[in-house]
Figure 1 (spheres, rainbow, N blue to C red):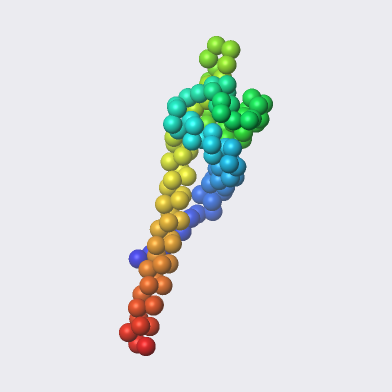
Figure 2 (cartoon, rainbow, N blue to C red):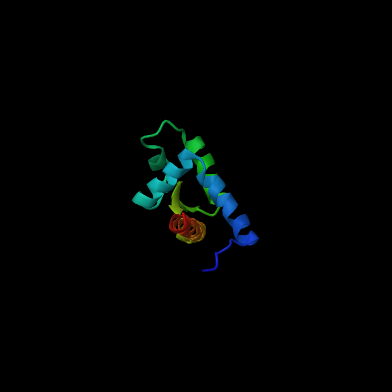
Length: 118
C-alpha cells in the first residue's frame, strides 16, 4: 500500500494552524466556541483569570490562522469557529495517522517474519 505523503503546500498551510493551537489558552477558546457556539469576549473571559485584552490577543492569533472569525453585534464582537479550517486540520492529522499506520504495519510484518525465521 503506497504511503500518503503530505505535499509541501499542505505543510505550509497547516503550520500556522498548529502554531495557533499550540497555546493552551487558545485551545481552551476553541473548545469553548465549539461547545457554546458563537460567543462575545465577555463570555469567553468568564471562568478565566484573563483580561479581555488578553483574550482578544489570542482570538486575533486564531483569526490570523483562519480558525475563528468575528462579527459585530451591537457594541460587541461575537466570535465563532470556522469549521472549514478545522476540517483541514482533521484531514492533515488523518494523513499523518495513515503514514504511521503504514509504518507500524511494516514493523509488525518485520517482527512477525523475524519470529518465524528465528
